[in-house]
Image 1: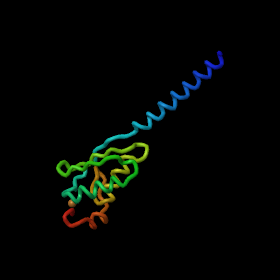
Image 2: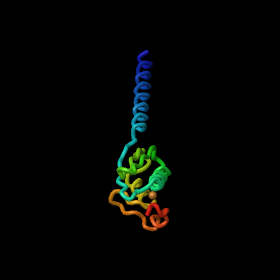
Image 3: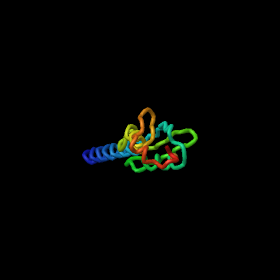
Image 4: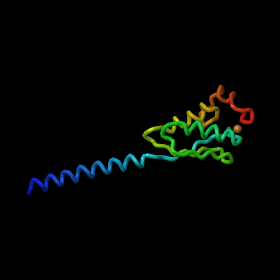
Length: 113
Ligand SMILES: [Cu+2]
């Protein structure tokens, strides 16, 4: 009887630990805002959005043409903020203090240059 009670407590404790671990993984998402000053038209908004959305771990992107900023929701265990900034720069747009990739910039549609 006593041993059974110990076993039951041990099982409950174990289940409790696993439960809280899963909760921790579920809330590992963050939201950040990145300055994208060279975004000038809807095509730019699409280009920047696509560059971010193809990254694994990005859950939501909102690029504001008026405010020149990209708001990104991402899973911190899958992708870093630096990787988000780099993806924008590689698409041909300045991102925060990271300069755009000039080659990618030259390949943008004329309306975006
Ligand atoms: Cu454009």
